[in-house]
Structures are given as C-alpha cells and as structure tokens.
Length: 126
Image (cartoon, rainbow, N blue to C red; front, side, top):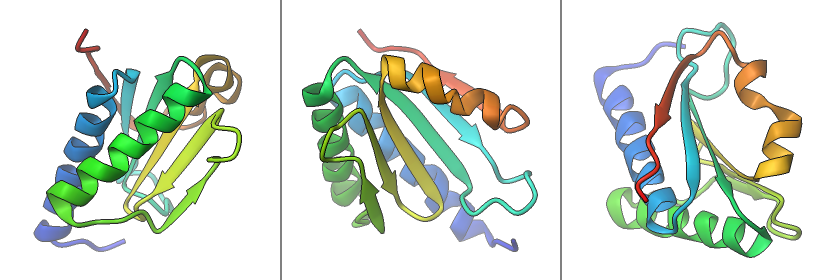
C-alpha cells in the first residue's frame, strides 16, 4: 500500500479524534494498533476499547462518531454490532474502531491476534 504524507497525517488525526470520542464517554483500556507495517492489511490502525455494558458501549460508539464528524468531517463507511452492543465496529477504512464489552474483548483478543503490530496503550483519563 503506497501512501503519501497527507494520508498518514489524516489517519493519525482520525485516531486522535477516535481516542477523544472514547474518553469523552469514559471508555477504558484504549489500545491503538499500528498495522501499517503488516503485509496485506486493509486498515492502517485498529483502535480498541471497552465499555461496561451494552448501553455504555453504544454511548462510546456514538461519541466516537460525533467527535470524528466534528473534527474531520468523516462518517463511518460501515458500522456493525449496534443491535446487541457487545462489540460495535466502526469502519473508517484506514482506521477501524472496536468498542467491546470487557468479556467479549477478552474472548476475541485482537491484540494477541495482531501481536506483530506496533501497540500503544492509552492511559485511562479517570
């Protein structure tokens, strides 16, 4: 995948807006996986976080959508999981966001699945 400087900046700014959206609704255990050096990846970043309940997971995903739209004008290309809100996926093409309930995140363990990605854990803000 060839990319120019503006694409990299755009993806990094999108990640920052996603993290802000998560923190706005007190999502926790935020992990950013940089997938750019992994061959054949369809996204540059995964952002993973947790909410306490299906209501909380839904609120976090709504906050992400709102802040990303406000800061970058972007809307998700695709959204999955809104019905039961155990795992909501927001696909912004270069950045894919996973908002999990704790037990579901543990079960799927995306961080281990993509262990060769560069991992950044974001400190909880509260």
